[in-house]
Length: 66
Image (cartoon, rainbow, N blue to C red; front, top):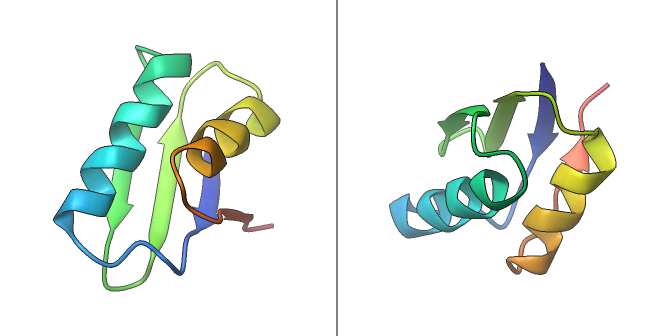
């Protein structure tokens, strides 16, 4: 499980864009989004950096939660 804090994710549209970006690099990934806490949790087989890059390319600023 990889978790990112995405402070600029503020609404359902943002969540949808991020989910779609993750699906583009890992179609089988399970994405759990918590908008109020700006949290994106991803359970999949893709490397953390590829997921982070996909979210960044979608226009957001993901920060890995250790």
